[in-house]
Length: 71
Image (cartoon, rainbow, N blue to C red; front, side, top):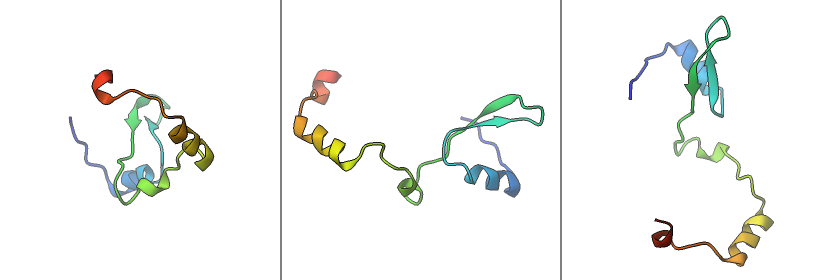
């Protein structure tokens, strides 16, 4: 994987996004995408899409397959 060093202004803009984001040039052309790194310091900003009742329902319903069977 290649690396690109950005100036402080660009880094600030990227840190302000919380999800995968398209990167555009001045003309609006897509040049790539940015996916924020998940680190222990920012993992709490992501919310689980399931509410507690749905999580409990899934736990109680059982089911699924052992990993050995999936592989």
